[in-house]
Each structure stands twice: as structure tokens, then as C-alpha cells.
Length: 350
Image 1 (cartoon, helix red, strand yellow):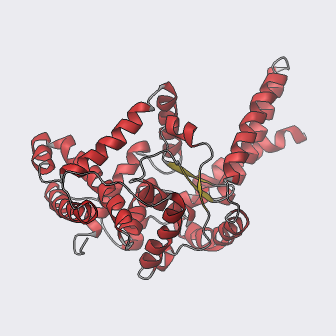
Image 2: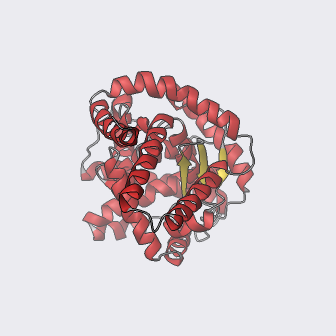
Image 3: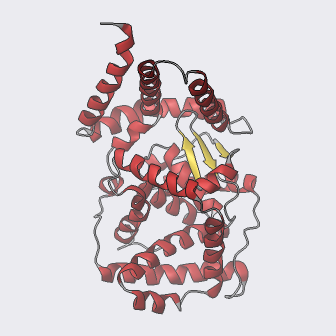
């Protein structure tokens, strides 16, 4: 066999192999997530965590620049050669992506580990949302002392990075598999572009750095960070990371973290109710402190200011990316963490 066919065939074998691996989540959980990935992630965070800037951002930027230059230089070459070169690159990229992090997409689902259901009734959602409103109002008033004022997070980014560790520490006392070790949290160097792409943050799978968009409203920053840290400890599902991020935020003693977690959850729950029953949504909304909705409007204004065709393109791209990686609901997967919350807190206090 000619060497030029090796990497294209390797890509094909990878795709077939991953399809087979989806049938063995326990194997992935035991030998990859709790085995190989544990050592890879710890090594990566040890190497890159102490570097004060995002190495992953620089790698991505360099690779994108190289691809653009490569295509420009090869624009007159035979198209078959360019296709082979592109497939070779994708084959290597895809192998490293899965080896270094993405096999976590195929691990045992979190709801099975927690032994909870994933469906709920409208009555259960309404009951949970009412509890969430009381808790959100309570934390909001503790911070502002005024129901009409929005929360202004007084913590700087470095303090948020350090404080986030406390929430995960508290969380891991009950769930050892949620233990977070060896910090590697960064403000993204490409935050400007992430804003227009519609991303609050991302995990770089090649360096295992948790990247957070430094331009997002500061009151949301703690929950976004905790979400990306959940990716670092080996969770691929966006709904699971939202849920873990929510718990890590609300288990934190810091009120700004609690507020970020509760407002995140409340927004999703209210939206789910409003989708089915607008009148009930409006009735529940009246019971929420006005200052909370001022924070929501702050987030809406931020996203609206960055809405362009670029945002639309990346939403479509990421939606399909998630669907290809065990998340059949695409971007709607983010809201699926409501399923986990409603069931988890059936017999637990918020």
C-alpha cells in the first residue's frame, strides 16, 4: 500500500473504531477517563497551568494562520494533492483530539452515575423553579441589599480563578470523581473573537487549559469558569458540564459564585416554562427580584451587541459538532441540564 493512503485509511479506521467504542461506555470510563486521560490531563495542566497566558490560544492562532498561508501557496496545485493533504491533516488532528480529551464524550452518562432519571413532569419543573426563585432572590438580596439593583461582581478574574477551587473542593467530598486538581484556568487571548463567535469559554483539548472569555458580563464569569473546569475533569456533555458547573458554583461559600450558579439555572428553567406556558412564565417572573432581570438584560445586551453573520455561522457549526459527538440535541444540549437539576433536587435542598 502506498504511504499516501495511510493517513486517509487511518481516519476511516478511527471513525469506525469510535462507533464501536460508543457501545462500551464502561470501558471508556475505566480505562480512558479514569486511566489514560487522568494522567494526560494532569501532565498537561502541570506543564501549561503555570504559564500566565493561554498557550492553547497561541497554538490555535498559529495553526489557523499556517492553514491560510498553506492554502494560498498551494492554490495553483493539483486539487487532488490538496485534498490528500487536507485529509492527512484532519486524520492527525482527529487522532490527537480524541486521544487527549474527546473520548470522554463516550463515557458513562452522569445521570447513571448519580442514579437519577432524566425526565420530569411540568409540575416538578414548576415546583423546582419556585424553590430556585426563592434561593436566587435570597442570594441577590444578601449581595445588593436592594431588590431593584443588579449584582456587580467585585471580584477580579484572578480571584475568581482561585475561589472556584473551593466549590469543587466542597463538591468532591460527596463525589470523588468531581475532584479538581492542578489548576489551569486562563483568560482567553482571543476573547474579542469568542464574543463574536458566541462562546463564553472553551476547553482547549490539546493543552487542557480552561479558557474563559474575559469580555462576558462579570456576574456570569464564575459559572462559565466552573463549566469549563468540568470539561477539564473529563466531562464532554454540555448539559453535564452545566449541571456540574451549577453545583460547583452553588457549593461555593462565595456569594458571587452562588449568584452566578442560581441565575444560570433560573434562566434556563424560566425559559423552559415560558416555551410551554407564557402566562405562567409571566406570573413567575413577577416573583423574581427586579435586579436579577437587570443582570439578565446585561447579558442579553452583550450578546446582541456581538450578533453578526459570524455568530450565526459558528452556532450552526458548533450545533453540528455537538451532534456528531454524542449530543444529538446540538446546542439545545446546554438546556438539558434542567433535566438533571429537577431530578437531582427532588429530595435534596438547594
